[in-house]
Image (spheres, rainbow, N blue to C red):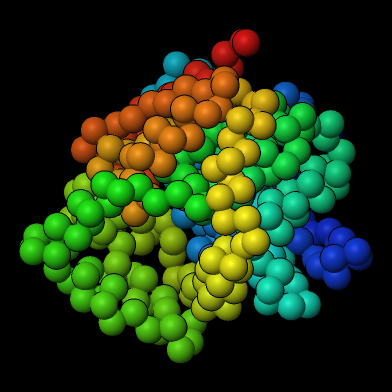
Length: 311
């Protein structure tokens, strides 16, 4: 196993982009982590980081620790921090943080890891959009693609009107106050605002928001990342390019979505699955934006089955 995949925090530089990138590797204690067992996880570009994913998906490299699964395989899991997040540097200009920009960075990571292709590329939410963009831009470089409640840049699920209806629901009223009073003057203000919004991401916020907060920890969210990425994606020259290129994806693709996801909307999952030739869509009822929290056993089991399935 190459040193670039040893357990721990790694960095590498890309001189042509004037950027340094950081990634974190977790490996099983009992396996060598050969290339076929590598999962690369693309973290969201807006500054949420990898802690919530590292805590939530640890059963992928430590099977049986938190959940019962049919497989005892442990995978080497790589969490890639996008530009401006944690130890990954900011680009010289804030105009260089669009989905295609961040997707192109995955190609730099692949080359650094000396992989012919990503055996498994996984992304959640905005991280899913970046992973999806990479699979469109470099179709032959992804073996299997896993999308968890992913964003689809350029596509809006019209059924997200469901979110508006929660304004009068006592479970979500405080969260709506945070949305309407969102502060982005500093990292501290932005972090506090987002913290108050988390109930909107769950079917059962009272039970599961505390688990998400524990997984995130005391992390401060980056206003710079949030504003730079949001602005760049809105200013794309071809705003529908991600939707238009879904048919270019060659990877076998698993799409997992919570039916009650009010942030991305189930229509995104249906639209994505429609155009990707080798796709499988799995939906969970009574589940919002974080399926491995509200449907832990099902999510980990379905990911494992997909990874280990032979074409």
